[in-house]
Image 1 (cartoon, rainbow, N blue to C red):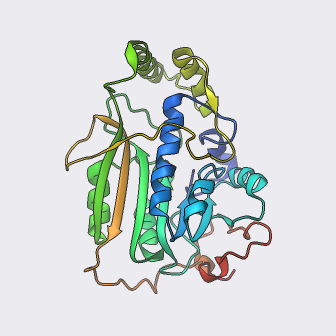
Image 2: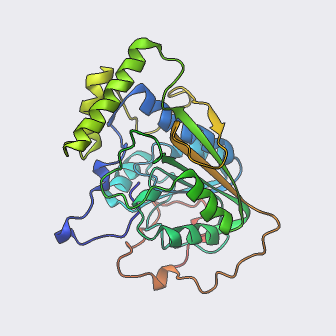
Length: 315
């Protein structure tokens, strides 16, 4: 997560590792289901395809993806998060440090781009959408999974810039020639779960809104986990790599245009329309021309020989 322009350390650079569900972070059962569902759905889309995950964080979902995909590259703005992923995966796959608004890959390099719970950190996300479009092959797919800003108890993450609503995703990706499907998951008021669980959810929501109102919402995921522990009791920890069956697979409901306040999470899947004329991206900034604020791209992990040379610009 946390693909955003890098501010000066003297101005208080964001520590995205404090905001990311990384190895060892406590999760509620719902949080575990949120993590597992997005990667299980993505793994189905990834079958036989060249996949780039933007905002991969410490790489919990990459294992599920690479079992299905032809090629997987993980990427993130945060060096510390990539270091955690590197410690687990070693030389098994490439990990690239980058900014989502300046991608160091050739046009048409990937069949699937994934961006989970991180696009709202990107200050130049308009350019980010264009960059994703540039690196996708014809008939390629991009999938976003984000918190839904239209839910009543929504609280934005520290350092976030803008959360796209369902209709904003439709408009932006539609303007680039994509067929867009938006789904909602994790209903704000679930029909099941038992009275105790529903009361706990409502109590947590009330606590969140109260603490936000007085400026006491914890700024880190570990701090928020303490708040959740009050409502849910014992939490489970994020593993270094999510195994199959890690948590419950949550159903998704396709959403019509218009406000979507009834779901906590948005799944946005956009496929290039076969009738869209190819765009000329030859004038787009390459890695060699990237602005000074963009982080330097790291070398692939270890002695990887899985196809990185075919998709990345030479440094």
